[in-house]
Length: 444
Image 1 (spheres, rainbow, N blue to C red):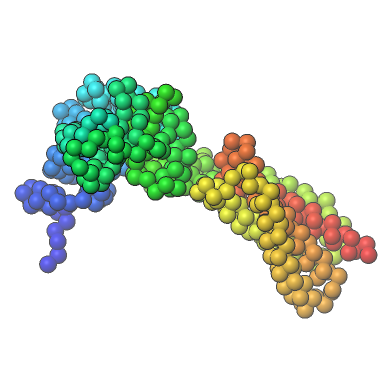
Image 2 (image 1 turned 120 degrees about the vertical axis):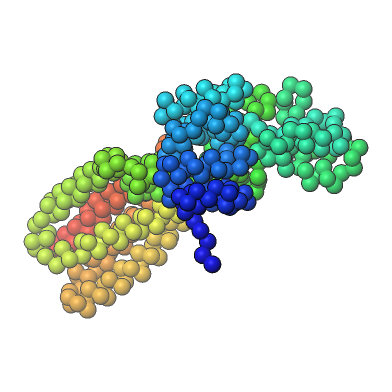
């Protein structure tokens, strides 16, 4: 029997069946349901959610849907949602909203929630402080295991995670960390200070969030404490927040590597002019680089007139050089992103890519020499094309591997170097090499 959709249940006013369907549904799946509903249906569905699930579903909704719901919800309903959201989710939500919506949201937040949200909003958007939450379980060294569990039961319901607990002194200085697993396996009379781990990994509020994500990946963490400059515990970062950071950073890198200005807005809801504005700058840069490339070809016009067969190999030479450079830059950018490569590894990377490019260049050149010789019967032309291709591949892979490292050294995003700059340099350098070698062949 075919299951009746949520939209049909709303339209036919089967509210009892609708609430029964929502009772055990996954919050993320419910958030996806909103995308297929109109504004009024979204409001009905949201009001039908169990009260303990409404905030969780709300945190997974797209920004546009959140803004729509806020316009339809009453102040008491909005107050319930804002005060039930985890603080990091509330901050993310507020950062997405226009000023008039933010004003109404904060007005309906409790005084304590509003104070904590405003505090978190003060941190730089790329810092660890901007993605942390202040909802964590803290314990004291002098507590027994039984007292620790009593505290976890008392305050844990509203915390983002209770599996990892942090031990602080009376001034909130971070002393250690203990997991619920460790507490469960310990004797009830044991002191927390005796079973905690004093060797605690932590981030400071000003640390770059990408660096924090690297710590999570390296040590396989589910949570990380965040401290201020005096090691006072001010919050924690959980793995779900790090996953969002990685998704945002990867998306941003994809955009930059494709020569597109990154955008936070969904594609289908973005205006045509808005999309065009984000694409036109780098297209203009690449177009200007194409003009420079054309200038190089014009400069060697006499060489082309003397040997017109050179023209046919220009696209192959430029494409191969661009692809070779893209391969190297992609590997290096990825290596730096996961912490495998550092700027200090520059000499090793250069030497390795130089050897790789020599092997690749020899293979590609040998194939091209054989092919051109068979097709044209002109050995000098074939050798000229093969030698140019070899030099272009070496140049492309060297540039492709070194430019991302240079960008990192200059505190710029390495992904910026992937498409626009590498393409420009390789195209220009490859053509200069090609025509210089061809001129020598003709003069011989």
